[in-house]
Length: 163
Image 1 (cartoon, rainbow, N blue to C red):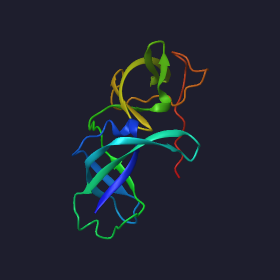
Image 2 (image 1 turned 60 degrees about the vertical axis):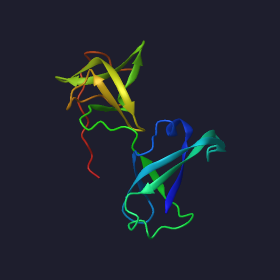
Image 3 (image 1 turned 180 degrees about the horizontal axis):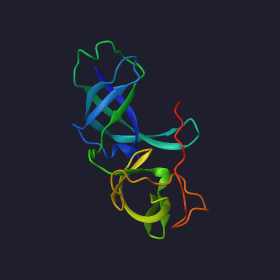
Image 4 (image 1 turned 30 degrees about the horizontal axis):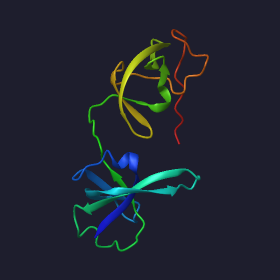
């Protein structure tokens, strides 16, 4: 059994044969897989929101064929492919980063004040971005800084609500 997963062509170009993948939401725990190949042809599809998207098929093979024995033809699954890993990376939420001229910046909390900090950024996913310069592990940044936040402004963190 193999999985044929549709990916946006802009994501598929970052993939290579042999990269690790996971098969999820099939009715059991995630299953390890790897990229076998990326088809060289893309096709136009209309998303649920009416957006035209170029999609291409990525063929995934299970790491353990016995673990995938309960899956079959046309089963619905979600697939994730790891295109980059940064195990010791400093990262910041996308909502804390903003453009400042030609630079990226954030406000970090230092001694009860917001400090405007230029940062150098790297890879991103849908939630986080790697920060290669400007922040250290453990720094606290201001998420979605409003127009009232300025360098040196007095700020205090909100209480985290426990669900």
